[in-house]
Length: 117
Image (cartoon, rainbow, N blue to C red; front, side, top):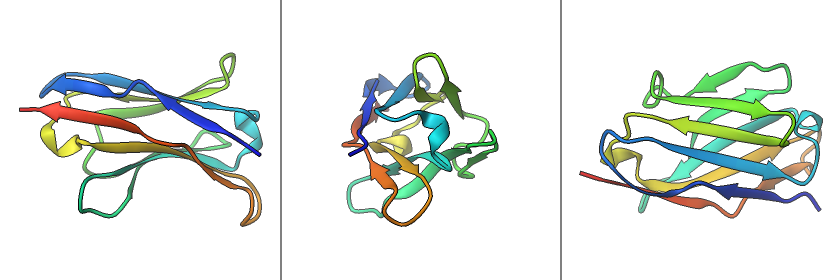
């Protein structure tokens, strides 16, 4: 069973930065795509950023120019650098990894990000 473990969440003031990290128990290049999602209270889970095996990145419009997703091969992690945070970014952030096939699909337990105004 693949495990994804997020870290780096916390409380930050508006305008501040945080860096999230997702550590995988399987080589990150064995997945087709790895992404970061978030879910705010009372809202649906939404994709924030993703990176494909080929290194192609995509971002939600709401975070473009502020967030950056990257891979660390040596640590086997996927990071999410979040800058210029605002209260609307407050949510539980989840790491998601999709391999090949519907069963090859995994979620982390989530990490809370709270941005105070």
